[in-house]
Image (cartoon, rainbow, N blue to C red; front, top):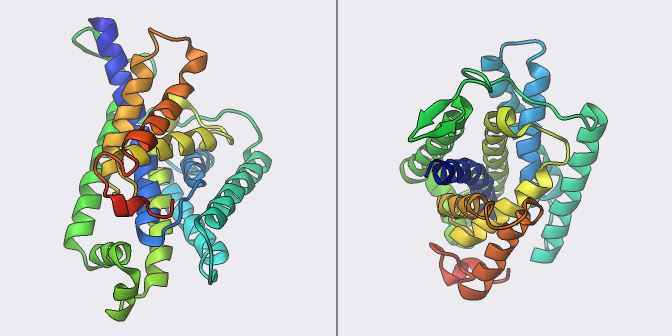
Length: 292
């Protein structure tokens, strides 16, 4: 029972990370129609920038500043590569984001080299752990789960209670009608990239003490976050949470039954199954996958 609970808690932790990446995918897709496969690089940049900033300031200041810097990077990428595109296809946009992912990786390699970095534990250390029904849980896990929960709650209130959130929902529902209503859809697209980058950076900071941070970690996170977004429902930011938890639990619970080398195949298997059985996702609608 202790081992089973350990796998469940591990799956929830990993699933929360995938959920944060999936939320970023959905924020950008629902507002702009772009599938941003550079989303995993925002997570990597968050951890790397925060690590560099801890050399000159306390961790409590380094993390918010790192989130802000990565958000500016997201805004800059949208303004340079997407703002002035007049006509484009889904395939065209996917190729651009994959190219951006490779570009960001190469820049990160030259800045931080290929060494693995890690932020210190926010509370406690890697030795101290909390026992729950016999399962050992690192204190940092609670920061990961708390951050994911906070992101979900704040994002829900943002979309439901704020003018900008309602404007983003309008752009998602009908961009042409949103423009006729006076909403600057170009600015909403830029804001979506900045918000998605900020959330990814925050996720990168809180997971860094557990998973470590390396320049090439973004690709794997992007693939699994995309699988979670598809499973939950592409275009629905909060549905990605359910998709992320399912993917994370499936990966963790598969450990006793298959070699670790095949663990990554679980996410691909879930993605293929979702595309065949329910391509619009568990909580999505059929219109959300048109043209994908």
